[in-house]
Image (cartoon, rainbow, N blue to C red; front, side, top):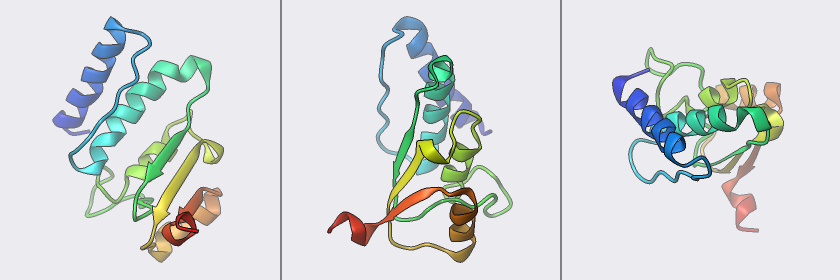
Length: 122
């Protein structure tokens, strides 16, 4: 993981060490920056086994690799799904409007629920 992603995860972990009930919110940046936040929150709540992830995105971002790397804007949902405390019942991707066939195949194989953007407007 890049140094910046490690810094984000450390920042969230430091927040939890000061206040155990904090709920972090992250705004801005490449949307892969959300991964270390999700990971740190998940690691914190792992014992309670009650964490789910709702991703609002126009793409599924379920690629295993993108542009020779596993940490990319096109792999965020896959990295979240790879976390051992997130399964297909705890991950929902909402707002997709542009889905590539390889991502759709992964979503179908893993039974990952995704709501297309046109369904959200109905």
